[in-house]
Length: 489
RNA sequence: CGGGGCGUAGCGCAGCCCGGUUAGCGCGUCUGCUUUGGGAGCAGAAGGCCGCAGGUUCGAAUCCUGCCGCCCCGACCA
Image 1 (cartoon, chains in turn red, purple):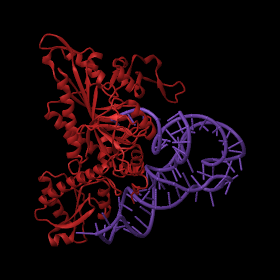
Image 2 (cartoon, chains in turn cyan, red):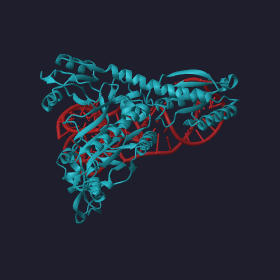
Image 3 (tube, rainbow, N blue to C red):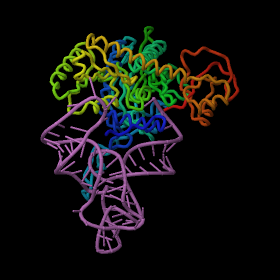
Image 4 (cartoon, rainbow, N blue to C red):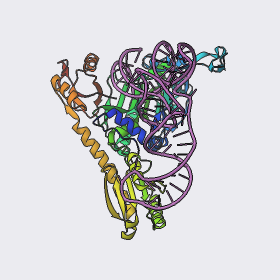
């Protein structure tokens, strides 16, 4: 018997851990705060990578790779950046180990102390901009549109599988431009790609917005973000795209000669999404039975379970294989499970793992020309004809994708609550959760005060927000528009 | 860094208070047979530095001391 998954209403955090574990997505590693991403989890990441990478390349980006180690001195060059990351950097100080005198283990060899410490990258702006300096001389060298797929390390105090681990996988784009306008355009273009990816592939509705000064990336002039809402009413920053201005160009002295023969600092962007998206995916769609995956990102879209009887095992398996091949030929990701496990065991297993469609084929179906089709999103099942099965599956996959998005969006929309008074603000935050759409006077003081008092932060200033004069519910000062508050992961 | 929990078979746990046969149980694993439409049944089998190091004792999973590690909840953060 598999372990029981804790019900969401009883303990959401425990439920999340149970799903990750039972769906075999990841597990804790021997190292605190790090995880082993298991094949099921990594397959999800690979699918995310495939689609994102395609979109990056379609918009002119190329991939490259920069080192995991960054000279300590690089980190200190951009003041805000240092302040943002100094507290969570892993530092390499020695280059070799030696066996302890009492043979009880190993220790750093004092003779191998590095001349300059190396930082394990928490992000790569510094080493990339140091490199860009040598690549950029003229306006003809611009733009540079580079992305890299990599791991990064941030020494976090508190971790959660996928949502925050000390080492995580991500992509980080780093672009260099001749003008601020072009860099901002790039920043927004990437934000659109992220939003499209989240909504179209992950069926995870997101709100595009801009971070406040206190929430933005260390070293950025402006941070754009996509914010999603999890089932427990907490917000999740799902991706960020930064307009870095000339901060890194100045810190690393990256200048180019423009068309009027004058030296100018380069304009920069950086942007990233990480394995955190997997956490967001889980907390957007999954239920008390386990993982629920949208078809467009599911490593396996359809699983076929043959139900062999005593006398018809061969015939059932043969038909199941034929059906599997038909689906494969139609470009559907399908797995035939003809293992020794019993059907009931398989039903549960694939349900926990979130496979969108399960097909079960038994003796009855052979006779009737039918097959049992079960939808993971609705937990429904019905007998359908084997005729036109490919089309039926395609239609059903599309319906599942749409249903998951609609469901998540309806929930999310219902969880955006406009409030105008401080009493309402507190009431909604505690009783309902979700996003609170409220006026803000634009000061970091009020923002900090609200965070201090309620743990709610300004998730973003939504891009599609109408300007609307009003009053900040906390400070009573005038406000030019509403922003989204929430408690967040 | 504070608060809580845990460390015994691959996984989940009991045993510990109150020291004493050969350290148990469930799941999983292996073999065989019967099965197969929602986590199968029977029979047999394998599998343990009881987190580590000291100490008390005739005797320690159990008592004492120290250490290590992990998880969860909070303060910082993609």
